[in-house]
Length: 430
Ligand SMILES: *Cc1c(COP(=O)(O)O)cnc(C)c1O
Image 1 (tube, rainbow, N blue to C red):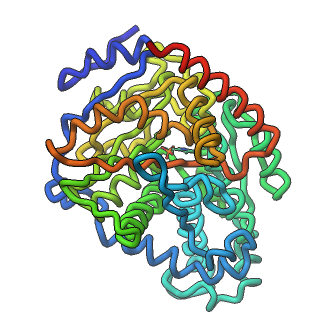
Image 2: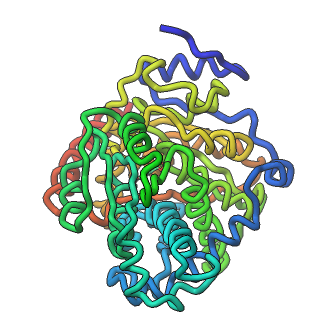
C-alpha cells in the first residue's frame, strides 16, 4: 500500500485512522475568517443570491408542494435546547427529511431557473417564479431530466422536489442506499438505477451517462457550487436564530458546531455560511465514520479528492449511509481548508448509541448519519473546548442531519440496536 504524503505532522493521526481508531485532528491551516473569506472564489454576494433564490421560490413552493406549505415555502429547521447546548434540527426538514433539503433543493431551483430562461419562459432567472404560469413551468420542466448519484438522501432531495416541480428525475444509487429510500422515490415517479458499487462509482456512471445528452442535467455533488451555497444559507439562519433566542455568541461564548460530513458539501457550505455570519466566534468540526473519513484524509494529506479511504486500508463499511463516501468533493476541500477547525471520527457503535440517546432523552428521531454530531460532542467535546480562548464558555451546537422520513419499523430496529450499543458502552466505562 502506498503511504499518502502527509503535511503538518498529520502522520500520527493518519496512522490511527488506518487502524480504524477514533481520532481528533486539529486543522493547522485554519486562519481568521477576515483573512480567508476575501480570498475564496465564492463570496458574500453568492450567499446573498442563494438566500434570495430561496425567498423568490417560497410562494410557488408553498402553493404547489403540500409538505412545504406549513412554512410558507421556507426551508428552515428549529434550534432546540439539548443538554448544555443546542440541536440544529435539520433531521426535521420537510419533504427531503435531511440536510439535503438545503443543498439539493437549491440545486433543483438553480436548474429550474436555467431551464425557464433557456426555454423562453422568462427573461431573467430573477423573475419571480409565480409570474410564470405554474402549469406552463411544469410542462416545460417535464421535458427535462435531472440526474444525480446518491447514497440515498441526495436522491430523495433532488427526486422529491424535482418531481414536485415537474422534472423527470433519475437517481443512481450506490450499494449503501437503504431499500426504503429507493421505494419512496419510485412511488413518486423517480427512476432509480441501482449500482452494486460505491458512491464515487455511482456518480461517475451518472455523470458519464448524462454528458452531452440534451435536456439532461447532472447535479454533481462532487463538484457543485449550487449545492454548497444552498447549504451555506443555513449558517445565516443559525446566526439569526441565536440572536432571536438571546444566545450571545462571541469570543467568550463561542459556538462549537458539530457537522456530519460525507463529500463535504453540507458541512463545508454551512461552515462557510457560519464564518460569514459569525466570524471567528464559531468553531466548526466535521464528523465522519471511522471507516469513511474522506475529508479528514483529504485535508490532513493536502490531497483533497486525490486520496480515497481505500488507500488508507479502510472499507467504507458503515451504517451511516449519508456519510459513506470514499473521496471528498473536488471543490469543497479547497474552499474550506482555511475555515474548518477540526475533523474527527466516530465508530458505528457510537453513532447507534447516540441515536438511542437522542431518542430516549430528547424524543428525536434521527438516522445513524445524523447522530454523528452528538456522538462527536460526547467523545471529542473536551478536545474542541481547548481550541477556544482560556476562560471562554463554549456553546455546543449539534447538527442533526436526517431522519424525518425513516419508516417506523426501520427506526424501531435502529433504536433497539442503539439501546444495546448504549448499554455496551456504559459497561465498557472504567
Ligand atoms: C449527505 C448527508 C450528510 C453530509 O453531507 P455531504 O454534503 O455529503 O458532506 C450528513 N448527514 C446526512 C444525513 C446526509 O444525508
